[in-house]
Image 1: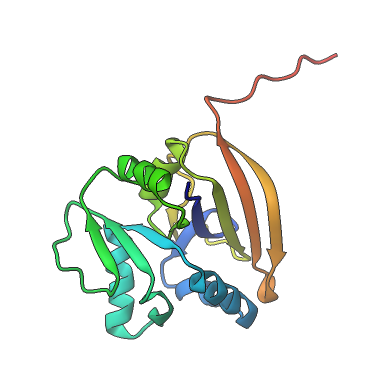
Image 2: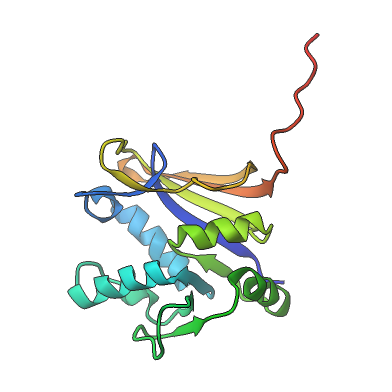
Length: 192
Protein backbone atom coordinates (compact mmCIF):
# COMPACT_ATOMS: atom_id res chain seq x y z
CA UNK A 1 0.00 0.00 0.00
CA UNK A 2 1.35 3.41 -0.98
CA UNK A 3 1.89 6.10 1.65
CA UNK A 4 0.45 9.55 1.05
CA UNK A 5 2.36 12.59 2.31
CA UNK A 6 0.82 16.05 2.29
CA UNK A 7 3.55 18.70 1.96
CA UNK A 8 2.84 22.33 2.83
CA UNK A 9 4.84 25.50 3.24
CA UNK A 10 3.46 28.19 5.51
CA UNK A 11 4.22 31.46 7.20
CA UNK A 12 4.19 31.33 10.99
CA UNK A 13 0.62 32.68 10.91
CA UNK A 14 -0.63 29.95 8.59
CA UNK A 15 -0.62 31.50 5.11
CA UNK A 16 0.60 29.62 2.03
CA UNK A 17 1.59 32.82 0.19
CA UNK A 18 1.50 36.61 0.50
CA UNK A 19 0.77 39.43 -1.92
CA UNK A 20 3.91 41.19 -3.12
CA UNK A 21 6.31 38.67 -1.54
CA UNK A 22 8.56 36.47 -3.70
CA UNK A 23 8.14 32.70 -3.74
CA UNK A 24 9.11 31.04 -0.45
CA UNK A 25 8.92 34.53 1.05
CA UNK A 26 12.40 35.12 -0.42
CA UNK A 27 13.90 32.96 2.33
CA UNK A 28 15.02 29.79 0.61
CA UNK A 29 18.45 28.69 1.82
CA UNK A 30 20.93 26.35 0.15
CA UNK A 31 20.30 23.52 2.64
CA UNK A 32 16.52 23.86 2.21
CA UNK A 33 16.85 23.73 -1.59
CA UNK A 34 19.19 20.71 -1.27
CA UNK A 35 16.54 18.95 0.86
CA UNK A 36 13.83 19.79 -1.69
CA UNK A 37 16.05 18.36 -4.45
CA UNK A 38 16.75 15.16 -2.50
CA UNK A 39 13.05 14.69 -1.77
CA UNK A 40 12.17 15.37 -5.41
CA UNK A 41 14.69 12.77 -6.62
CA UNK A 42 12.95 9.98 -4.71
CA UNK A 43 10.47 7.84 -6.62
CA UNK A 44 6.95 9.18 -6.06
CA UNK A 45 3.82 10.46 -7.79
CA UNK A 46 2.83 14.10 -7.32
CA UNK A 47 -0.83 14.94 -6.82
CA UNK A 48 -2.12 18.44 -7.58
CA UNK A 49 -5.19 20.38 -8.58
CA UNK A 50 -5.74 22.69 -11.54
CA UNK A 51 -4.76 25.90 -9.72
CA UNK A 52 -1.36 24.53 -8.68
CA UNK A 53 -0.83 23.07 -12.16
CA UNK A 54 -1.54 26.45 -13.76
CA UNK A 55 0.74 28.23 -11.26
CA UNK A 56 3.66 25.85 -11.86
CA UNK A 57 3.32 25.82 -15.64
CA UNK A 58 3.26 29.63 -15.46
CA UNK A 59 6.57 29.49 -13.57
CA UNK A 60 7.99 27.28 -16.32
CA UNK A 61 6.79 29.55 -19.13
CA UNK A 62 8.05 32.74 -17.45
CA UNK A 63 11.32 31.24 -16.21
CA UNK A 64 10.50 32.74 -12.78
CA UNK A 65 11.13 29.45 -10.96
CA UNK A 66 13.20 26.44 -12.00
CA UNK A 67 10.79 23.51 -12.12
CA UNK A 68 13.15 21.20 -14.03
CA UNK A 69 13.59 18.97 -10.97
CA UNK A 70 9.92 17.99 -11.26
CA UNK A 71 9.85 17.44 -15.02
CA UNK A 72 10.57 13.71 -14.89
CA UNK A 73 8.23 13.10 -11.94
CA UNK A 74 4.85 11.51 -12.63
CA UNK A 75 2.12 14.05 -11.91
CA UNK A 76 -1.61 13.46 -11.53
CA UNK A 77 -3.64 16.63 -12.03
CA UNK A 78 -7.20 16.51 -10.68
CA UNK A 79 -9.38 18.89 -12.67
CA UNK A 80 -12.68 19.23 -14.45
CA UNK A 81 -11.62 22.49 -16.15
CA UNK A 82 -8.24 21.68 -17.73
CA UNK A 83 -8.12 20.10 -21.17
CA UNK A 84 -5.76 17.53 -22.65
CA UNK A 85 -3.04 17.40 -23.65
CA UNK A 86 -1.33 18.81 -20.58
CA UNK A 87 1.85 20.66 -21.49
CA UNK A 88 3.98 19.79 -18.45
CA UNK A 89 6.02 16.64 -19.06
CA UNK A 90 4.80 13.63 -17.08
CA UNK A 91 1.37 15.12 -16.27
CA UNK A 92 -1.82 13.07 -16.51
CA UNK A 93 -5.26 14.66 -16.27
CA UNK A 94 -7.64 12.89 -13.87
CA UNK A 95 -11.31 13.83 -14.01
CA UNK A 96 -12.43 11.24 -11.43
CA UNK A 97 -13.23 12.15 -7.84
CA UNK A 98 -9.85 12.72 -6.16
CA UNK A 99 -10.68 10.90 -2.92
CA UNK A 100 -11.95 7.80 -4.73
CA UNK A 101 -9.02 7.82 -7.19
CA UNK A 102 -6.35 8.30 -4.50
CA UNK A 103 -7.88 5.60 -2.29
CA UNK A 104 -7.65 3.22 -5.27
CA UNK A 105 -4.03 4.29 -5.98
CA UNK A 106 -3.01 3.70 -2.38
CA UNK A 107 -4.46 0.19 -2.50
CA UNK A 108 -3.01 -0.73 -5.91
CA UNK A 109 0.55 0.63 -5.73
CA UNK A 110 3.64 0.78 -3.57
CA UNK A 111 4.87 4.05 -5.15
CA UNK A 112 4.61 6.87 -2.57
CA UNK A 113 2.16 9.68 -3.24
CA UNK A 114 2.76 13.34 -2.37
CA UNK A 115 0.78 16.48 -2.78
CA UNK A 116 2.22 19.78 -3.89
CA UNK A 117 0.25 22.94 -3.17
CA UNK A 118 -3.44 22.24 -3.86
CA UNK A 119 -4.94 23.18 -0.50
CA UNK A 120 -8.48 22.00 -1.29
CA UNK A 121 -7.17 18.64 -2.53
CA UNK A 122 -5.09 18.25 0.65
CA UNK A 123 -8.11 19.06 2.84
CA UNK A 124 -10.28 16.53 1.04
CA UNK A 125 -7.66 13.76 1.29
CA UNK A 126 -7.05 14.50 4.97
CA UNK A 127 -10.77 14.58 5.82
CA UNK A 128 -11.15 11.20 4.07
CA UNK A 129 -8.45 9.70 6.32
CA UNK A 130 -6.06 8.98 3.42
CA UNK A 131 -3.04 11.00 4.63
CA UNK A 132 -0.23 9.00 6.27
CA UNK A 133 2.20 11.90 6.83
CA UNK A 134 1.78 15.64 7.07
CA UNK A 135 4.96 17.66 6.48
CA UNK A 136 5.05 21.40 6.90
CA UNK A 137 7.93 23.80 6.46
CA UNK A 138 7.28 26.89 8.58
CA UNK A 139 8.96 30.04 7.29
CA UNK A 140 9.94 32.63 9.94
CA UNK A 141 7.64 35.39 8.75
CA UNK A 142 4.23 36.73 9.75
CA UNK A 143 2.19 38.02 6.81
CA UNK A 144 -0.93 39.18 8.62
CA UNK A 145 -1.44 42.20 6.34
CA UNK A 146 -0.55 40.57 3.00
CA UNK A 147 -1.07 36.84 3.58
CA UNK A 148 -3.31 34.81 1.30
CA UNK A 149 -4.25 31.16 0.98
CA UNK A 150 -4.88 30.26 4.62
CA UNK A 151 -3.59 26.71 4.83
CA UNK A 152 -5.83 25.36 7.60
CA UNK A 153 -9.21 26.92 6.75
CA UNK A 154 -11.82 24.21 6.32
CA UNK A 155 -9.71 21.45 7.89
CA UNK A 156 -11.30 19.01 10.27
CA UNK A 157 -9.91 18.76 13.80
CA UNK A 158 -6.66 16.80 13.59
CA UNK A 159 -4.32 15.46 16.26
CA UNK A 160 -0.70 15.48 15.08
CA UNK A 161 2.01 13.16 16.38
CA UNK A 162 5.46 14.65 15.72
CA UNK A 163 7.72 12.01 14.17
CA UNK A 164 10.57 14.17 12.76
CA UNK A 165 11.82 17.74 12.71
CA UNK A 166 14.68 19.70 11.21
CA UNK A 167 15.92 23.29 11.23
CA UNK A 168 17.20 24.83 7.99
CA UNK A 169 19.52 27.81 7.61
CA UNK A 170 17.53 31.02 7.70
CA UNK A 171 15.19 29.81 10.42
CA UNK A 172 12.83 27.56 8.45
CA UNK A 173 11.52 24.58 10.42
CA UNK A 174 10.46 21.23 8.95
CA UNK A 175 7.89 19.41 11.05
CA UNK A 176 6.65 15.94 10.08
CA UNK A 177 3.57 14.46 11.71
CA UNK A 178 1.32 11.42 11.61
CA UNK A 179 -2.20 12.90 11.46
CA UNK A 180 -5.31 11.51 13.10
CA UNK A 181 -8.58 13.09 12.05
CA UNK A 182 -10.85 13.64 15.05
CA UNK A 183 -14.63 13.62 15.18
CA UNK A 184 -14.39 16.74 17.33
CA UNK A 185 -12.50 18.08 20.31
CA UNK A 186 -11.28 15.32 22.65
CA UNK A 187 -13.24 14.91 25.86
CA UNK A 188 -11.71 16.96 28.62
CA UNK A 189 -10.43 15.32 31.76
CA UNK A 190 -12.53 16.12 34.80
CA UNK A 191 -10.67 18.47 37.15
CA UNK A 192 -9.78 17.16 40.56
